Image (cartoon, rainbow, N blue to C red; front, side, top):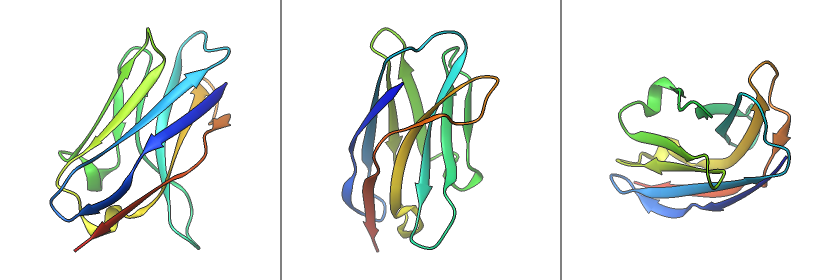
Length: 116
C-alpha cells in the first residue's frame, strides 16, 4: 500500500489545519489508516486512526479537537485539526495496517507547526 500525505503547514494557536492521506495499492479486508506525530528525538505516537468500518481512536490530548474521517470509495483519510495548540507541532505521518497487524505502510511526513 502506498500513502501520499498532504496538507499541514503553519497554524496559530486556536486555528485549524487539515491533513489528507491518499492510499493506493492492495487495500483489502479490514484495515486501518492512521496519523502519527513525531518530534525530533521523540518516538512516533499515534494521534488518530480510523478503520474501513469507520471505527475511530484518538490520542487523549486531541479528543474533541481533531476529527478523522475516511472515504472508502476514494481511499482517502482526512484529519481535521481544530483549536490547535503549540504541542500539536510535529511531523505527521499517515500509515496503514491490516486490522490484525501492526502498521505496515507509511507515507512521507508532512510538517505541522503551531505558533502561540
